[in-house]
Amino acid sequence: MNKADISLNEKKYKRSIAVLVIIAILSAILSASPQIQNRVKSFFARDNRLILTKIRTFYGADQTEYLILKIKDSTGIQIEIYEVKSETQKNFKQKFELTQDSDAYITIDKNTTNLALSDIDKDNQLDIVAPSADRNGNLRLNVFRFNAELNSFEPLLEETN
Image 1 (cartoon, rainbow, N blue to C red):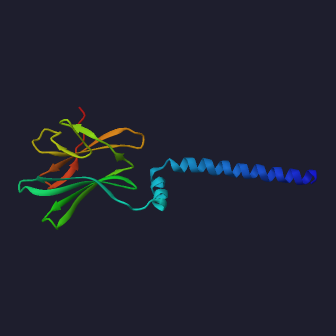
Image 2 (image 1 turned 180 degrees about the horizontal axis):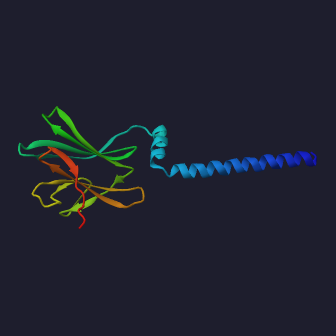
Image 3 (image 1 turned 60 degrees about the vertical axis):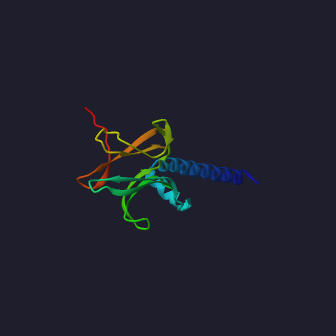
């Protein structure tokens, strides 16, 4: 090998390193976006749904029975609510996405659970309490209340004064 060959090999090596560094920086920047994370995750993840908890309860003036499920899949946690017509017929009512969250537990009345019913807003109606943790480990207390006027569930937002 002569000096020209060595110089050419060094240039190729430096170019390769520069390209790899640029790719690494772009990958780091793009991986910070939740939308891109979900798209990449969908290529590798299987669509397995795992029911973590289920609760049956009654809401409304006509005491309609509801089945509330806390489900984990590749995108995070979902709260799914079904209206129970009979033991064999359940109609989908609503879904709340807790994207990129993982399961968490809460203690209510000396019982530890990951899905509960409790009157959080003191309106004499049980609210759905679904604790979760975000990907940074921050705990969240997701609360959903039944709106009798709309005959549907809605997130209970903390009022700030």
